[in-house]
Length: 401
Image (cartoon, rainbow, N blue to C red; front, top):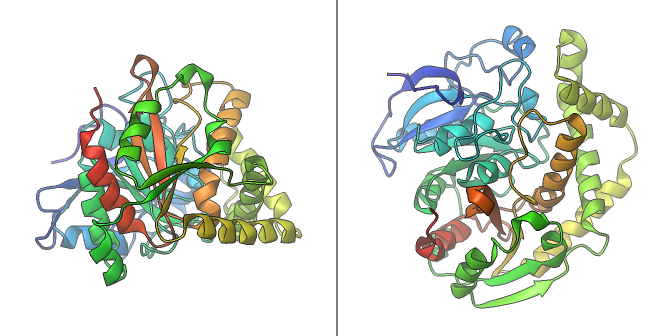
């Protein structure tokens, strides 16, 4: 039986695949973003030209195989922004999924359909991809839990790439407990010592001043109570500065490096297929083409410096606490300039974990008049299971209406 598509989450709501075995995810259901291979299905990557020019997958993506083997049932393939190159969730070809937690506002992208499928209670959890924030942003806008793992921690075989240097498979759920259980399946190759230590670590909380300076004033102090919940389960809390160059410089380095990789990945196909893109997507690909082949040594050097700095700051027991995005979801159908401004603010915060390849979990926070907000915790490199286990422990006391 297919899924109810009343919120427009699905590209294919009728695709159902039974579990291949029993395991820790018995009885759960999940959906996948339409860039993740399902045997016999042609992924659209959010664009009709891509759909026409590609063949059905011969095998499930590795991540999907693991979930099916753990007892989860696949129910539906979800919408994405065109070639994953957006954080908004509005697709000129296939429409925009409805944000069930913030009617009249965008769901966020590019894993828009996956976020809406979870937020609308259609499935228990969903897979997305996250390069520059494409799991974290829609999870925040739709008021659910989202996780971007350490770069390289989850097998990417069978996933359409965007910028392989930053690409990850992430997932979303309505509880931290399920977020952890999915992680225990997909992060099965994590070191045994990390898994054994996952439930016992008590971290130091590091509050990044530059990140908190970016929050929308209209959201007031809505993050205060959730922050207190995190602090109650931490060894210490310290306010720090992370970016001596400023987060704007970090965002620009990420934007340059991501764009050059994106054109290297998809430029040849774009020239050959000449696909029709929405205006905002077309403009980004045009910029990516301009950046291809240019000297990006300064951005490269800054990224290396950022990695060393964040690794030193986090050490073995530190976590960085930031707002996921500056505020709530923008209104749907907004002007291009407004949407780009919101995208820029989201990317400024999301680039922190992206540049350093770090794991990040976003937690739902209730904003003014029930508008969903997101609170994020970034862990040290490879500390994915430790981070998820700690969040599951301390967040159980938090209640959202």
